[in-house]
Length: 312
Image 1 (spheres, rainbow, N blue to C red):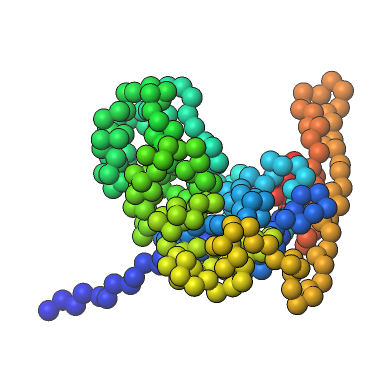
Image 2: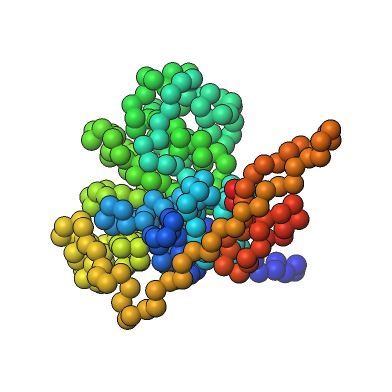
């Protein structure tokens, strides 16, 4: 009798981890996260007071920090054990999809905004999985102006899902959505649990309770608590968690306890201009300023610098 070799369980994809991450603007540090691991293939609600650094964190994971000239950072973001080179443009960010706050559509049909064809099997698969036949499948030829804001967000969500990302980052996806539309949008997002890692920012406690499997509380630039949603709302582990549930505005004081030393100021950005093409040369003139901001490197970005990470 032929023996069938035992099959190995495939590694769980979507393990999003943060190690010793610091992010700031100018001379001010906004976030300091020594360690944070989001539960893979689950929905985590990222909650906390306004200006606690939640959107800054999601933008950094999505590789958008370099678009803000005053932003600096150090530390690592890992996806399934591999470092995401945020802002490098090397394609690693394609594994992470990001929906910014207050996103909407402006023109074209639903199908045109999805960027695919009606017979795309990926589209049919996601519409079936998310239960969107009546709300999207039957409206592919509609102009997006005929959709509610909830419809806009779901079309944008579908467009991201067509790329099969491992991680989905949503910055307040229910902002400005009609109250009557909230239940079906939440139900649509809930269907992603078990399929991919989702991190969603919300300031609404009821939405966090209904939508998420876990809650991560960020306050004052630090991770105060990461626990299961049911446990968090029944009995938070920290004073900050209890304070946020009571008032929605709990801040740590001091910012770092146990008298940790103040972080070193961000590395000064040195500037060097690309060599200009000689007079009469057919070469291009690259007048861009840039420098490596990695704490491990003080080299200025030149044409041959191995340390360039996409900063400009």
